[in-house]
Length: 186
Image 1 (spheres, rainbow, N blue to C red):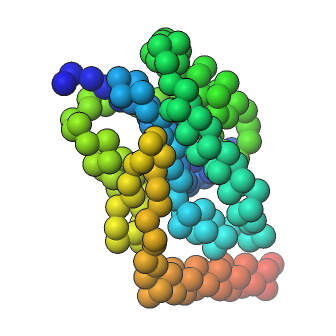
Image 2: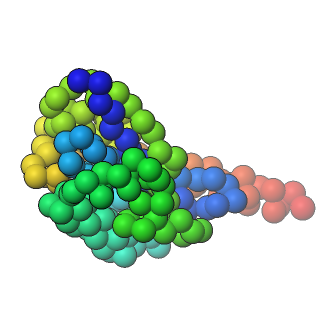
């Protein structure tokens, strides 16, 4: 079993200048198995609300839902031409089939190639989701069924969310105090 799989991480890039980004999804290609899987992290997407004021998830969620559906269609119609396109130029395949490369807030990372270390695609997906912290707060792993990752019911730990909110508010208050103090000194 010396086959490989390839993947790219989908990032929300809030600022091109500051290079701020948050991993919110992953697109995985299993060419020998004829599977293309896209999964996103609802928790990561919701976390953006706390990071950026006035952030609305509905527009981004629509894109993510479209990417998931597209992966399902490609898997359902997977053939030798699809496999060849993936193997010859995966970057171009992603640009044509999923998301054009431009300066928008959603961007795929470079393509990573890894040895398929298990015949269990579910386990490979779980490991990738853990590696890129895309299943934070999920106590049960996601399952791959027919090329799509079925989200398990997240069990959000309220204490962690409340702690993050508290830290965020403290940072904002600290910035405000420093700004006010600097303004008074001038």
